[in-house]
Length: 136
Length: 142
Image (cartoon, rainbow over all chains, first blue to last red; front, side):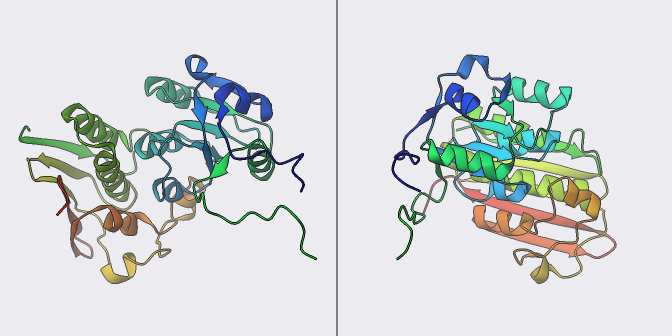
């Protein structure tokens, strides 16, 4: 990985995230210019509640209403369903009721994480070591 | 600072509505004007305890008490109870069914998450008879 493909840590808007992930925006038209600095990916509800997830983007394959409610409880600021999952009407309504942007992308969790990382988002473990040059 | 008592019912295995009590609690605490970090801690405790009742209890009750010193959550059910509380407090230990795991539950972090976010946690359980949690979160540190 070189400096041309990896942007320095920064912020992405919801619109930039949508475009980077080729995502469909289901809820959040009024927050397209909202900025995010951190992201987390998980398919476990308790992971969402464990750690500094307030204000972050959540990438998840959990396609049920509990994923929306858990995100509201944790203070997650946007949810992206990965792997082509399509939320139910109930999930969309619940997300809209709580002002929680909801998107879905055809990309896998791994690819979505990688793309957003390269675009400048960082994880909730902000001090994680990142090697930019290969060893040797 | 108001004194407040509010009780809710929790319906076992009702995943359509599971979590609604906790969101209601979160909104009450936001309306009172607590610090966001305090609200988050209380909300996580509420949610994990509510979901435990939905998944493992029979129908249960949730009591929220707020006073100038403490936020108290008392969650009770007449479900199957906890066989080994010490084991249940270990991260990663779970008795979740495959159905619950497919929904994203069963990481074994429910009680540990409550313990991390509460200042005082009391667990009383009788296998076959039910479980009662009393969770206390101090409004002011120290």
